[in-house]
Image (cartoon, rainbow, N blue to C red; front, top):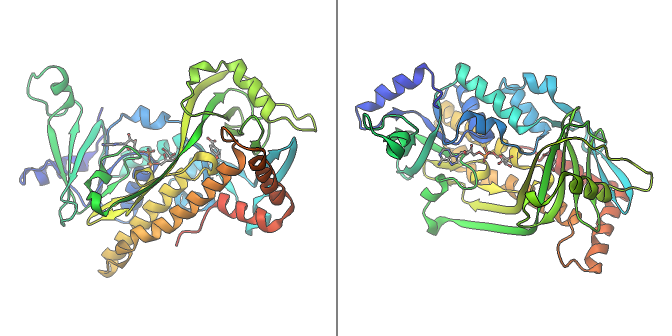
Length: 427
Ligand code: APR
Ligand code: PHB
């Protein structure tokens, strides 16, 4: 299914003469939060773009991901005109609870950060809001359009070869070819790869220029959605000898909960009852706090990894969001990092248009990577502090508890966590 609007027809005509089917200023690969927000920011700056998304709209709008928006992300969405439903339905949270050794300790965000908080508003809802805006008033947003390769990234006319499902296949062509449609070309002035961890954009950067930093953790998260009001009004991060557990939420009526499981765990091997029993054990406290149970409506396992791709730019090709970096979900940084990248790019391109100077575009990769590495550090440390790796020694257990004791007793330590969780300032 392809969702386009009037301008795409013009773009198609404009490019048809040069053997390309579309022409735009910024070609965006991927309609996740990064690609969708970038299209919105460019639209607001009067810069045209085309978004190519390989999946269909329903897939993008239903993909379950962390829904914690830093203060900076909330501000950006509001300023972009995409914050109306977020302000109405989002839940402002002024803290989180750390749980360890059957104790509870609250981290007070505003008191430790000079007033910052976070907002609980699911990534699915952010994407729905941005898709609706793009279709109403933005440039072409093509679903079912898979980018095959980025070419000419080192030139001033990069191109994206892509194929749209059921678009332009040979007349009467049956089977896969007919469904897959003919190959097309989007000619651009810039290409931004917002195509996630498995995308094609970064493959257009010469390997000899690329350095990839990776860590795979020996555990994952088994996550459930449950139709039951959250058992606590803020998020609860629990460190337990049996493993990590997290209580989060999607709304006052829907809980989102996770528990650490060995890497490669099959979600099907965990019955609902077994999940609830294990969560209950890991959230146990001395004050008899109770975990409410309810019907489980979704269950899946997420692998845990850190990944950074340097550089995040090559010529006229830029990488943003998961296309360039992955963080373990412990610090809820993924969406917020994607926002920081696309804000940095949109500002840099607008600066070029206004002043003729490409200095901010030239600084893009360095600017983003400084923020990315701080988020990687924060997520790595929070993951190491709260998860019990297989084979953890009694010494390592004590070090984890000492870190948590320090957070509970030192304002300075708690301040570092609160600053990291509520977000690193955009440069
Ligand atoms: N052509 C077109 N679209 C593609 C291609 C391709 N070759 N490859 C991937 N895509 C699309 C995917 O279908 C997906 O919709 O790119 C999009 C990438 O979106 P995300 O993976 O959500 O990445 P990003 O927009 O950077 O958002 C980061 O999403 O995965 C979470 O935890 C992550 O919260 C973080 C956020
Ligand atoms: C979520 O609500 O999905 C969530 C919240 C906080 C995290 C990770 C995931 O750290």
